[in-house]
Amino acid sequence: PRQLAIPVGAAATREAQADAAITADNYRHFGEPVYEYDMGQGIEDGYLAACEIVRRDIFLERHDADERVDGVSQRDLWDKQFINARTGQPLTIEDARAQYVASTFEDKLLLPERVEAMCRDLFDQLRDSGGPEQKTIIFCARDEHADRVAAAMNNLYAAWCAANGRRRAEPYAFKCTAAGHGSDSLPDLRGAARHHFIATTVDLLTTGVDVPSVRNIVFFKYVKSPISFYQMVGRGTRLDPASGKLMFRVYDYTNATRLFGEDFLTRLRAPKREAAAEEDSERPEREREPIIVAEGFTVRVDPAGRLIVASVDGVARPILVEDYKRELAQRLLAEAPTLAEFRQLWVAPTERQRLLAALPDGGRMVEALRQLDGLRDCDLYDVLADLAYELAPRTRVERADEFTTRDGAWLASLPGETAAVIRALAAQFALDGTEALESPRLFDTPEVARAGGLPALAHGGAPAELLRETKERIFAA
Image (cartoon, rainbow, N blue to C red; front, side, top):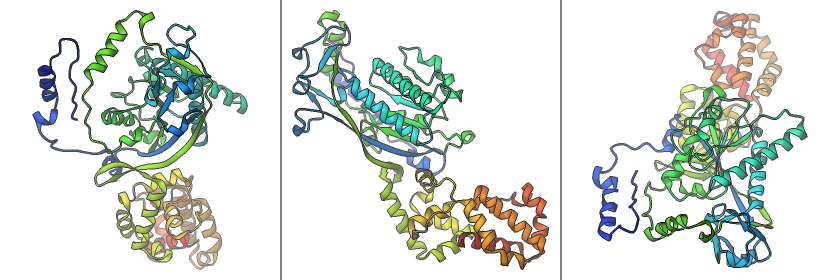
């Protein structure tokens, strides 16, 4: 990646800064990359987990909201209670900045109600998408912020356990920062299945941490660098076949996901601003700019969109789920204008693969849609048929049961051993869907083998033709 950064300090000269800017430019020295492999391409190729983005909007009760300032002003603070976070001493309105932009929240301006509202909203999201006990990394603004987020998540979890008669996992949420010796907890985050679910961090888990079981990446901090953003998101992209993880979610409370598709180019640092910050850190405590804790805000969190990450012109970009569904349905209808034509293509493995390849992302995001729409028990056939042909989805079990009931006359017309094998094949479909009926080990599965296997099926005619008709009848249910 291209990173531009220059040293700062009183001794730095204009010439030194210019020279540093030149020598820090990787592209200038090494040229364009020989090979690039984008995250979106990795998802398409099946090497990385699919990504859903859940964006949330945070609203503070403000007195000058009509100005549409991204932050708060002294006017918004006049009726609030606030103290110096460093010393615990009360502060007056004169001690506050004229303006706090949103990116300084939880850094220069600490808002307890905002933390509570965001944590409550996140906990509800986790609870409703598989339960709160999911491996999750929350990126926070600073060490103290990570402490407060971990405490809030633990309180919410304790209340949930009490309300549901559940035994609490200990610990549930924990701080994982350099200042808090967070690396000591990394093995538990990675390997423990019954504790260490929620890690709150600042930068420690940004790179170099391999935790395939992480299912959620959460942005409570503001991020400006595309490089840092991709490193953070990368903690969730690992597949975890052992736990069935094929996708992960990004919960975005700070619009960090706007950085998808941005060039890996860091901005030049502002020497004066950084020098001022360094100078402030070296002052005695009583002379340093206070970090203010402001209490009394009313905070609301609203949905701001649900997206998936897909490859657009070779670059990973967020796409609204509804837009992706619309495009997918249009492509599907172009290939198979009617449900009957779609069914004929679906039951033929070669034609089905051609059909899927013609869909956006080669149809690889359809699996993600199946999970997003709560259709895990349905075959992909039903997911697509629902989108393009408005066919009410049925579970695999429902299709298998209706097939054996509705097509009883057809089964009765076949030799008894052949019908028994076909019923066993329908049971395999109920378990694993279309792929189960095309597995090379299909006739070695215990239920099918007990029914007589391939020899028994052949008593009723050509096995390939009988298998094709079985699939057609299952999907016609």
